[in-house]
Image 1 (cartoon, helix red, strand yellow):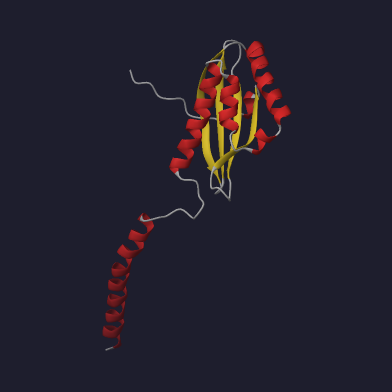
Image 2 (cartoon, rainbow, N blue to C red; image 1 turned 180 degrees about the vertical axis):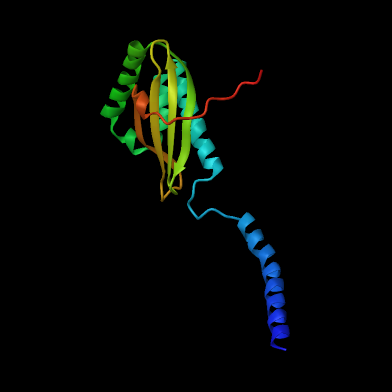
Amino acid sequence: MQGRYFFALILVAICLGFAIQPHITAEMYNFQPPPGTPLDDDVSEIGSRVSIFLRGLVNGRTDEAVNDLLEGSPLEQDGEKLAQLKIQIDQSEQQFGKFLRSEKLQLEPIGGSIIRAVYVLHCRRFPVIWRLTFHRDDATREWVLVALSYDTKYDDVPTTEPPRRSL
């Protein structure tokens, strides 16, 4: 008699397990990112802004490109440093050669309020690595540039898989 109750109890447990499983699986597929997490649209927006900036440099429009990129950024507040940045960019073209084209190396969210972009600006003599960091302003919910640097430290460049070419 006890064997029958034990068997019935196991059968009920198995049936309940199957009944609960679809509910758990459905919730796993309806995953919503935590509030404040950068979405794909945010990352795409940042990628577009950086691409437009670098295209402006390639086209010789340094002033316009820098002004547009830094709009709303705390970096635009210091007019002297802003002017110095524009001069340094123009001088770097003399050092590295004519700016030719850009290539995205890394574009990723870091936590819920930062997106890092790493691009290479191909120049006639040397490629230049650009690192840009954007932060979502809590008050305006806009993405603003908070850090900008460029250099030729190739060892610090994130590795990426080269695109595969079909024959």
